[in-house]
Amino acid sequence: MKHTFLSKRALSLVEILITIVLLAIVVISCFNFYVNVVVFSIKAENYKSATDFLAETLEKLSLYNYGDPLLSVTTGQPPPNDHHDDPLPACDLRDRYSGVRQYHVDESKWDNSFSDSVYKSITTSITWNDGSVRTLTLSVRKTN
Image (cartoon, rainbow, N blue to C red; front, side, top):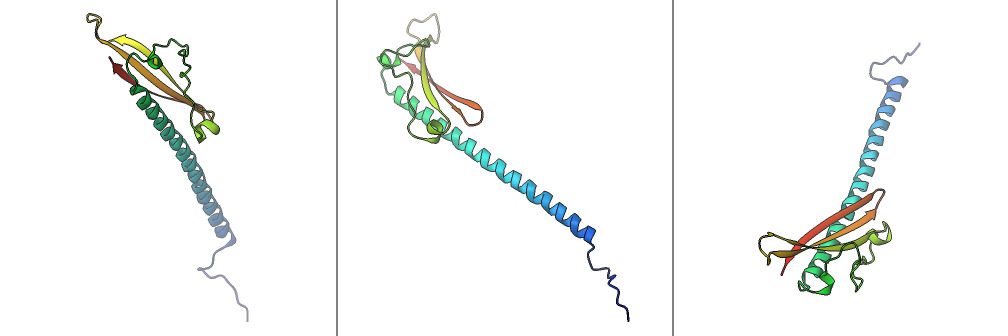
């Protein structure tokens, strides 16, 4: 007696190969999504750290008096006491991505018709390289 295995419920070799290929496509796309999420998470953490450091710098500088030499107007040159480059503490932005934080002070007037409408604009920036050069800047105005 001959037995033939032509059951309609069994899978053919072609169907198994198609299933394996489709499964591989799904797994590879999920892996790519995971890698992108990890990269995005690292970059978001860098932005958070940069924002924290800039806010910390602005808070420190806002404690100084309007006429303090640290807040003297700078035109691209470091002030005499050399506080222009405020080094970053040990962190990924500094050690891994060569991050540098700086500040710049400008003096302006709210309204030119009033002599006492002078303010100083303190701008802090941080630059780092995590695959591409990134710069984040925050500023505050300080009045007399």
